[in-house]
Image 1 (cartoon, one colour):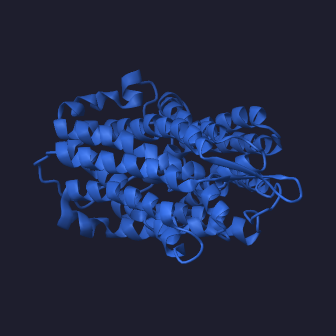
Image 2: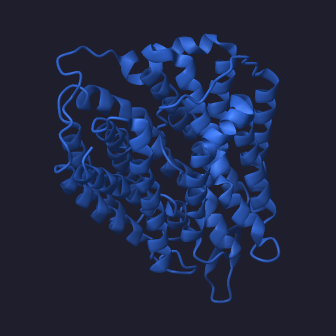
Length: 427
């Protein structure tokens, strides 16, 4: 791979995740404070990600793999997405906001697979070359967080400032849309071939569920996404209500942690094995919410920071280890199908459940007070809110430890490709 192509792919990854990080972290706060929505509506807005994740395989499987070059589809999706994000920024109520963000996420989610596909097709040794390219995506997410805090858009009490995050993401999406047409040609691989719905959704690998331990892992993966949805939807609002300054850039410490633990996965994997790695990932989710439940901006501020920084263990130890486990168990024939299947189940079904559950729970512990100036102030009793996803994570952990009995020794093979289905979030 030439230096010029490497720079182009790195730029593509940076913009891809800068766009997402520019608005996704603060959307819940924007909806609660600026549009005055309920927690249920916030959860509903975040379901757009899961719906997009469910629809994405059809766009990739039926269009990108059969008819048009990946870089051209990437360009069209991001140009269209840029327009939709600008429309999102002009919505002044939830009835106008939700359809626009839903259409946008249906356009955006397929691009996560497209940028990976474009990258892999240019590489001779993906295991060695891809991480260097992909890390620019995480850096893009971090830079978006720094930008929001540097411009004070997430400042407490700032009226309507967060609407600018959608405009910034819109401009970045249009830039990436135009830039995509200069990316290396990535023609369709299955042009003229028949593709079944089962193949698109990864259902060819459903036979893996006959393995009892994999079935336990599969169900645990869906269930652990419920606590994950609480973090995505309401963590930024929680930090602001607690009085944390520069919430968005502080949350980006989670992505820094993700980079660090991604590098350390081979070290831990060899020494701990798949069961302990998965268990530690689930345990980390329980600890994260315990920290949030008792953390504050006073003496227990360290708990809030620890809850953010532990993200690397939460995400990498469970989701990336799960991808390795799936890859080893699936075998050569069903590798791609199995990864698609587990991604559909987690970021599609699991998080969809979590987003719908989290909203009413947050609403239940809502506190409305009237200020001296006559304006209403919204806050929440966060401790019992965080106990619920933390409790779910602990229950999932205990059931996993009880029923997971895989005796196969799984090694981290040299050259293994680890591909994130989504961030942290990494989000």
